[in-house]
Amino acid sequence: MITEHALLPVVAGREKDFEAAFRLARPIVAAMPGCRSVSLSRSVESPSSYLLLIEWETIEDHTEGFRGSAGYAEWRGLLHHFYDPFPVVEHFVAVD
Image (cartoon, rainbow, N blue to C red; front, top):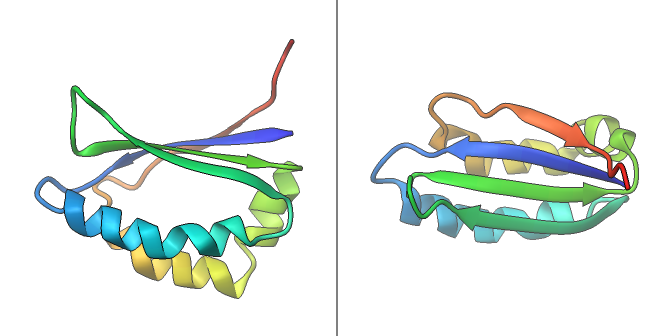
């Protein structure tokens, strides 16, 4: 299993709009082959910063499957205009 980790820097003042858009976007990624779970958390200390965690069966499910899909184009259209700067996405694997 792979955990995708992205810190999402949302433009200040757009948090409610971002959260509404994410409610529309979540089912898109959740329906992708290999997606096991999706969570979004908001920072207490920096309320314009969000943590997105998505568990994938394989890294390719994310990098090739999702990013190569029509669903990704819809996801991008719903969410990417909220970020400044664009988030860094990393993938993690459990070590225990």
